[in-house]
Image (cartoon, rainbow over all chains, first blue to last red; front, side, top):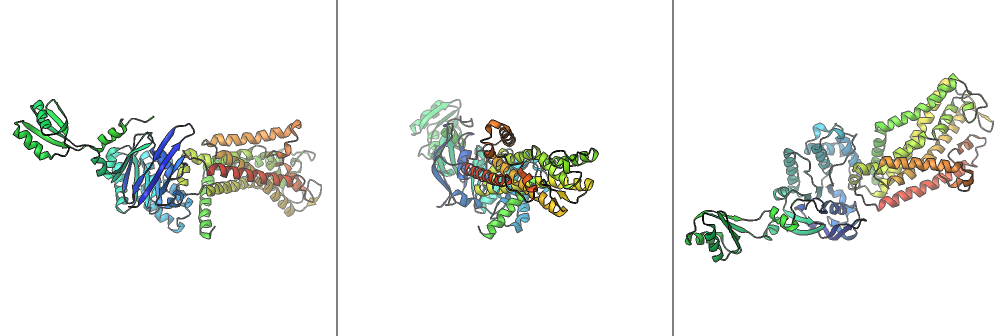
Length: 306
Length: 275
């Protein structure tokens, strides 16, 4: 499996002495949609800046599309830390400027490509408006249009749905999914777990500058344990029964009992409960979502890392 | 460089010029530059300066071209350096401040190419600023005082077209001096993300250089100051053309340009872009 993004020991120590990124080894498979997760301040953006050659790593190295960052960049569309354009230029003129800066872009097709990109993000009607007058959502869309000026093999998107309304969020996710379906590898940094669950095939979790987990979503989920939950009028009895059946970490509380499923089959547990005469009102197998995994790994949920 | 890549850079360069000349603020700046020669011409018409008056002012009523030269020597003292400082300070720091720098670099634009295009655009702006002053000066002067023969500083009279040639040489000299200031500004602009701060810093450097040049005790360092030869363009209005000061002036501007464009490149090539 070839990697669209890879890094080894990627480290950034700022002049202040703060280690923003610590020995990160990314492996983003070609063709994947890779969710780069982490609380705000965990080093995601600094990592992305190093991948794109905006800042020099203190140690380690990285590759995009199997080559150096600068050589790969024509095939890479990127969005870093929010949109940024010239305020007094229109949306279309801002894209013209980006396209003009691209020595590999064909000037003959520039107008058509720019309009196509604007159309794809739903900005064609507002193309002549000054960027100054754009709402945050429109600005975000324009930045996305900037990454679509030519076909890309890899998109590196830092918080692409930031500032969008629910409708805009859905549209942007559908654009990203569409690009991924065409074969573009997408690396998407986000602090929104739902975003990862909806559109990603792979994920990496950053915490305090370190990559604490990485892999395909099923593999990541497999790393955490599945629980069963029994709803009953006799929780203590149910708890004892679960223990007798071999479940670990059993707890019983108000109207329910829980335990780790382990290697047992859920149907055997239900049969065991019924045999023991425990009145079962409800039974559920709970596979932990990414959220539990995320909280488990970062130990803090969505707070800002210092 | 291949032809295709040169053409690609040409497109980026035109885009850079559009950015500078498409901005209302810069049009306003050029308009202010254009007002001064008009004021000079009108004032001279209303109240004619005596023939013995210093500088180029004495010649105005005899030949309209002197309005352009008078305006240039007045504006070279403040308005032109102000304009160049502002635009040069904005060159990299402005893009960094807005965040557009990171999107240019990830296009990708090679950092060397970015610095080269930025400097080339600054040179065009410097030339345009000088031409604005000289152009409006000539139009206002010729309308109010007419053309004809020009009496050079050495006393020789030359024809109108010869005079025009001399004005063109003086304009070129001023543009070269201002380009050196632009190179300094470009370097300062790579040090910060505050375009206005960078512009002010460059203007202060210019003023300090001017002040140091007037202190007799510091005359030893005078020739090494970036502005020392700026007003030496009188050399170009002698017959024959003298290069006693204008020659070292061109050399000084060339060296300052080389040093500071190199410094800007060296600084920018390795800079972490965190804006």
